Image 1 (cartoon, rainbow, N blue to C red):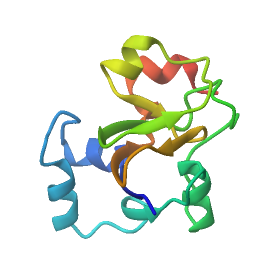
Image 2: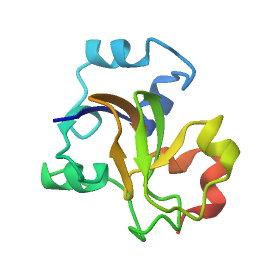
Image 3: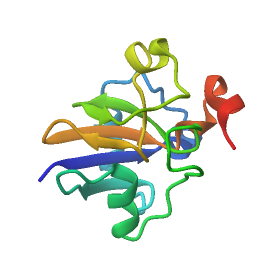
Image 4: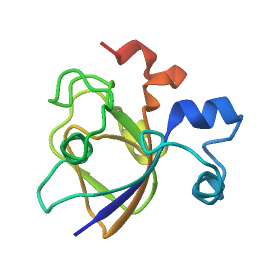
Length: 129
């Protein structure tokens, strides 16, 4: 069963950490963040990451659940996430900036690391509902 290690973008922002930092998850593990801000979730085969987070009691941002807005956007830091049809992200955002939508995204690797709540990034703001 795939495992997704996650970090809330707001925490990263509050701490003054960079998305480009390769030690991001190591730093987060050393802090005393609550489970909403940092931790791991197990995702069943064929299950979307957002669904798995909700099933484990988390209140992650979303709106449409159909890949048509950026509310549930996450930055993929490690591993792979396979997305169903999405209409909102540019090729550059997916390929170069590693943006993924958790509402239609499933782990494509056994271990995945994401920074969720990435809707706060400037370049996604205009697509948040």
